Structure formats: C-alpha cells, structure tokens
Image (cartoon, rainbow, N blue to C red; front, top):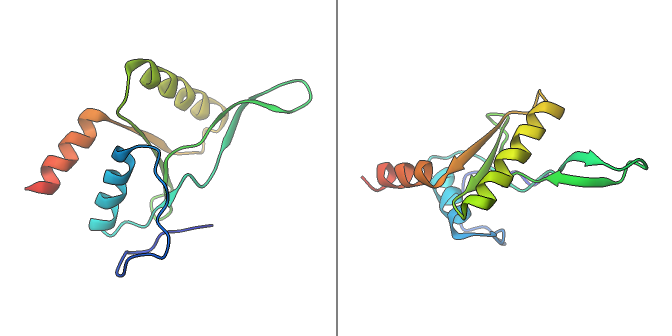
Amino acid sequence: MNVRPLRLDPPDVDPIFSHDSERQVADLLDFYEIAWEYEPRTFVLEADRDGNPTTAFTPDFYLPEHDLYLEVTTLRQSLVTRKNRKVRMLRERHPGIRVRILYRSDLDRLLVTHAA
C-alpha cells in the first residue's frame, strides 16, 4: 500500500487529485503530520447475480494511524446526496469500516483554523 509518510521532502510523485478540495485536505494532513493514502481501496456495495460489482465506493483518503477513511465532498448537492447514500451503504455492508464525510463547511472551518 502507498502510505504517505510525513512530507519532509517533496515526494517524487504527488497523487492527481480529482478536486482542489482534496489537495487542501492532503496539505492539512501533511501540516499536522498525519500519514495518509489517497484512494487506496474500493468497496463493492452492490453486485449482480454473477458477483460483478454494480455499485462501488472509493473513499478519498485513508488515515492508517487512525484506521479511518475520509470522503471529501464540496460540490453540488446532488453529488453530496449520492455520496451520503454510498457512505450509508458502506456502513451497512461493512460495519467495521470507519468512514467520515468532510463537507464544504467542515473544510472551511479547518482552513480558517489552519490559517489562524
């Protein structure tokens, strides 16, 4: 697995984030010296009769020292609703997996606190 240690020196290759908010979260995690992995695992939420995945969910970050997945959602309400549904399904199908959603308001508060 690709565990991201403290960033003492710039890494050779940074992940390509889907959205700038994910980069902001990565920067905050680095600042607070929290190891993280970017999109390390996809969870199958639904499958067809043959076992082929029909619905899956890949959280944005995994924090191995906290055994916690983070999903960052700062976009349109329709996407927030879809992500909330997938997180609910993940919790139902994999109750041992810890996952939290960071909403736009959460990220804004973290960035204000970090900037202070």
